[in-house]
Length: 222
Image 1 (cartoon, one colour):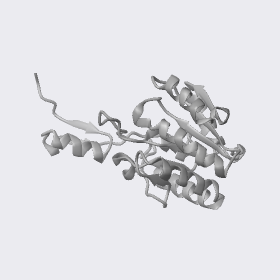
Image 2 (cartoon, one colour):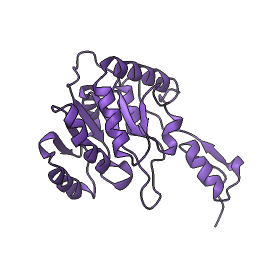
Image 3 (cartoon, one colour):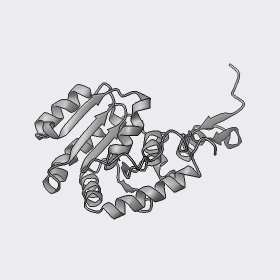
């Protein structure tokens, strides 16, 4: 079998793991995925954000951490009873997650949209008060290689709360452009969500900084 001449990875975190496998460092280039932040994933001042609307977008698999968000919801609802969680995506955990909502007594505050067309995502990002990506490391060791969906939300001006897996720290900084929480920490996740629901000005400040930073780093033109 012929050996590859060059290898590309989408984050410095993946670069480190590839080098640990014994690959010659000079063969490996970090080339992040891009997002169209100038034409497609953009803010729309004519779309009003829905008060208390949380948004999750992604496959319903372990590394996305959605059970953590559902487990955080009772604490969030205790402070903000009108909060709703919108879930856009499908996957093998769908039935388990719906059962968890019932067990937690939050079924009336959670909407499962199923798979959503890519063309419909910007409207969801523009409506939400917060985008939440509770990333975690799966039991198998699988984790996000690059946080593409949060970048789409950032492009649309949506404030974000995310689990701080290795790749995410390369994109934005905690309490500068977003709130990042330790992966798997439900209490920290609920606390961060409540803090931003309590503080509209902080949300707007973080979202504006995040978009500005990512526009110059991850836009397709860059």
